Image (cartoon, rainbow, N blue to C red; front, side, top):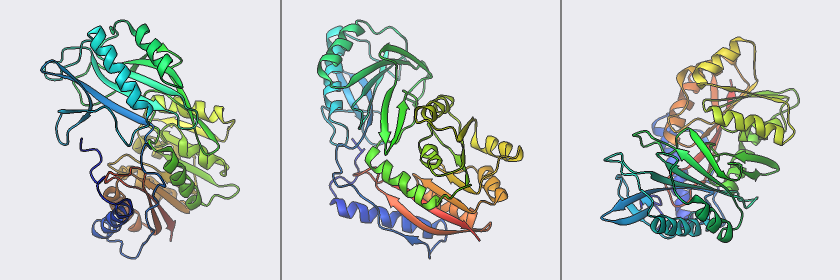
Amino acid sequence: CGGCQIQELDYQKQLDLKTNIVKEDLKRIGGLEDVQVFDTIGMEKPFRYRNKAQFPVQMEDGKLKIGFYRKKSHDIIDIDKCLIQDEKNDLIIDIIRKYIEEENISIYDEKSHKGILRHIVTKVGFTSGQVMVVLVATEDRLKNLDRLIENLKDQVEGFTSLVVNINKDKTNVILGLKNINKYGNGKIVDNIGDLKFEISPLSFFQVNPIQTEILYNKALEYADLKEGDRVFDIYCGIGTISLFLAQKAEFVYGVEIVEDAIKDARLNAKLNGMDNLEFFVGKAEEVVPEIYKEGKKANVVVVDPPRKGCDERVLDTIVEMEPDRVVYVSCNPSTLARDLRYLEDRGYRCEKVQPVDLFPHSVHVETVALLSKL
């Protein structure tokens, strides 16, 4: 399907490849040749690690296809199992496939923009065992959902939530903004380390919880928090890293553009009995300079931006704030290298970089970098 580009490669060789990708990007894009890059931290069992799956649905010549897009196309490879997804997904897809066929459910066609069911999204709590199924549809008109709910309840251990997500737009974005709970409360709970998190359909939650704990502990180690330290967590999502930091910091300010994620972040702070956090919703490049001008300051900054990296205004505010340490969590080594160069040219030194394999069998690699004020 194009998802596991390097699955045929020996796993140790995959890790070596990822270490080299990070080293090469730092050198080629960032001109950072003397930075210590550690070996990529891999998994003991690099299969069945994903807690979230997104399956597009398509009709082709009267045949139902549920699976993943073929590389660089919108043709669906029909699948009955995926070796990097939680095994419960194989069963869920089988149950939904039968439901679609037996109830003759209308399938969305992205060329004509007609039809109802677009995607199936699943979220599985690795520690809680709770399962959420999200049916992405153009309208709330999926018939006989009670029958599907009963089948999921009977056959899928931990099934706790069925949500219909409405997405009417002509777009490649999978989820719309409106969720309708058909069964359960539209959330699942999961843990990373000792912390508990509520996850809703629109929440961003790392897809590999085992490696996420390693990644976040590394970020916490690099932050090297002491009594009295205040932290900015920029691009904070549902507050996963914020809560890790708040265990050691005096106070944490989290910033995130997705309003639902910030609602979840506030709930997650309450869920874990933490009150030394404050969350702000909006574009990082607008909110961070604003709250800094209002007098909110930090001596440690953590950033975990999307693939495009940090907005330049965010980096400029960090430079102006002059924190002792910046911890940069990245899902894209090339934008990481670019942003590290920008900070190096403005009074920071990149001390060390630790790649972590969150996506075995793909070419993606997560990285944690530590910068110190010169």
